[in-house]
Amino acid sequence: MKRTKLVYPALFACFLMNAATAQAQFKIGDVLKTVIGSKTTTGTGTTTGTPSTLEIASGIKQALEIGTSRGADLLSAKDGFMGNMAVKILFPPEAQKVEKTLRTLGMGKLADNVILSLNRAAEDAAKEAKPIFVSAIKQMTITDATNILLGNKDAATNYFKRVTTAQLMEKFKPSINTSLAKVGATKYWGDAANQYNRLPMVKPVSTDLSDYVAQKAIDGMFIQVAQEELKIRESLGSRSTPLLQKVFGYADKNK
Image 1 (cartoon, rainbow, N blue to C red):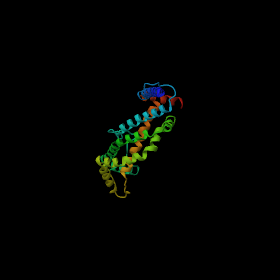
Image 2: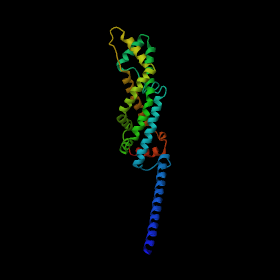
Image 3: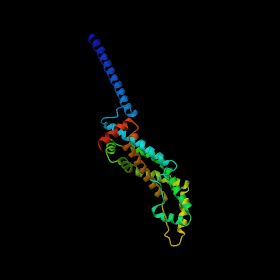
Image 4: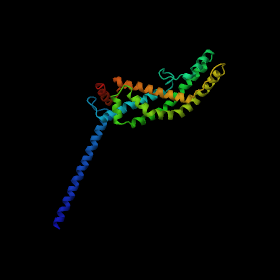
């Protein structure tokens, strides 16, 4: 009986010591995670040295979130396409003779309305791009991020082309169809094509505007993303956080 009384308290004391140790370790782990996490996310960590693989992944994702968000916002604003000659949508190549003929016949206003409406439709559809890019960034692996960081100047843009083009087309097409009707592009294009097709000795034109504008909108989106990528790679001022400065500073040294 005496032995039992001695053993159980000893075991209970041992259990309490182990529990206290585990609790202390758990709290220390939480503190370390919080400190490390705050250095990465708030930018209080060092901006020099070799970044870890996790820092590279976080830095690339942060840079791409900034770049794609800015690109989508720019293109979805009024005149985002219309006012940017790098992405402005013109008459389809097979229909440029239509534009030329209309202008020659004094119907330049109709041609202008077609071009304006195509670009307004693309600006409207560009709003759909941001969540698609965000999803692609979340799915990015550490290998993807490292390859982008140390790859060519358009490595991120090429990554997006590979993983988002099909999704963008799927999302853009319905939006483009709605936008084309809303801004009058369908009517203006129909008027222009009808006026042209009535002319003697011309080959009638028929263009699928939704396919054409959707593809041009996607092309324009990638052009804008490439410009934003280049800014972060080449402009120190565009590296707006300590993490970006560290990760891309490391990339600069390893070019």
